[in-house]
Amino acid sequence: MEDRKPGVYLCKGCGIGEAVSVDELEAVAGEMKAPLCRQHDSLCAEDGVAMIDGIRRVSKPGCRVYVASNEIPKVRNGLGMAVLSTSKGVMCDRDAREQKVGGEIICEVW
Image 1: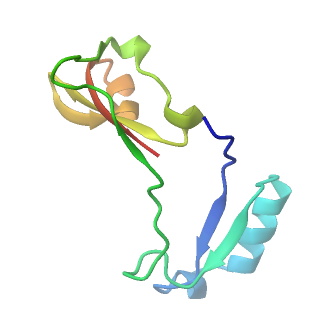
Image 2: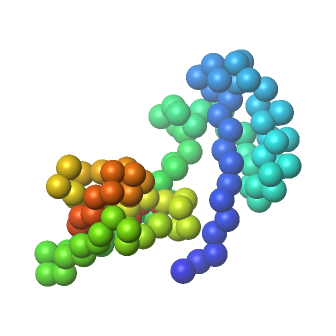
C-alpha cells in the first residue's frame, strides 16, 4: 500500500470565498500541520478536482465478506469509507458503527 498523507482543499468558488477568508483558513491548516493545502477555484463545479482517488470491491459473488458492527474496518485510517449492506439498508461505515449494525461490506472508497 502506498504511503499517503491527508490534505486540505479549500474552495474559492460558489460564493464560499466571499463568505470566509480562504487565506486565513489556509494558515490554520498550516498550523495544524496539514502536509498539503491547496486553494481551488471550483471544487464543487463540473471542472472541479476529482475527490475520489480509488474504489475497491470487497464482497464478490464467490466470497462474501460479513462483519459485525465492532469489526467494521477503517478505510485508509479513516480518510476513506466502506459501503455496507445492512438489515437497515445500504449505509457508510460511520453510520453502521453509530447504529451498531453489521452487514456485508460491498466496497471501499477513498
